[in-house]
Image 1 (cartoon, rainbow, N blue to C red):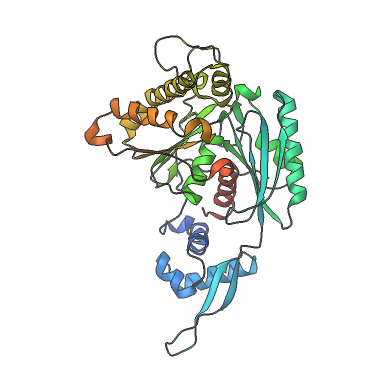
Image 2 (image 1 turned 180 degrees about the horizontal axis):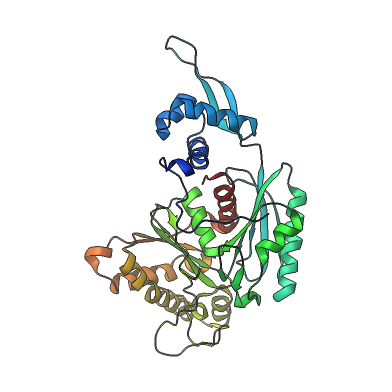
Length: 379
């Protein structure tokens, strides 16, 4: 079984829709209200969603039968009359598997609960594997995590580098030697559970939106095996006409040539910023000043690449995700300085740039958000 996002769909439903779409949407409204707010009465949910009490009663009864909603007891209430019965999402109904393929040395994954808490972990060394060997590693890692789950699995989410379409096909991931890799379909066939695969930076942006400090408009830069960006505009993921929105790693920055990239061009942003490139450059540097210069130049190149995007979209926040020892400090400072120098202060002077608060778990937790959104309509 496979599933995926609908292009242009907001992550969180907030209002009623046309009758022909109403029931599924309204189910998501109820689940979303409980997911974010916690215990509520039927009357609370009706007020929050704008749905009638009869509709809420109907939907709740259905969701209780399905095991998605539970009654938690009666509210202590000083008001006269029968106390209201409180409801909550059944947070112990399922577990989720999240897999992160973004790092250059390892594939990592986790079993998570419905609130995005990591319950157990597993990882496998990549050891330079590409093509079918890399796919086999993903399958092995998924099998380990499926065996670790202690509740029914709601779904499996994967964040992969490269360009990934809405059917979970990795159209191009040069660092893993993938082209047209049917990752979502193959994992679904192997394990018989819902699977959703998306670009790792897009997945990280979902985690920042649901579990981090991000607003509904944001850009997240994911630095790992490669460099990518995830965009959320008005709470809606942006994929692009060919699913390559945010693929900034292979944008050439500057006109001064640069190192050869795996894609065949010279001077791509990835050659300045990807983790293995930065690590190698810093290891070869002989003085602290030389190391500072490497980080400063990488930040400047990132700022050059981001300035047109910030200017076009009037973004207020950029979030960095990747190795803190590389990104935080000199590199981040050079990035924000370059951005401000290359955009109009009256529109972008209050632009903020920060590290994610979710650390190395961001893609795995974002994979959980994908599954929650695809299966339950919540995030």
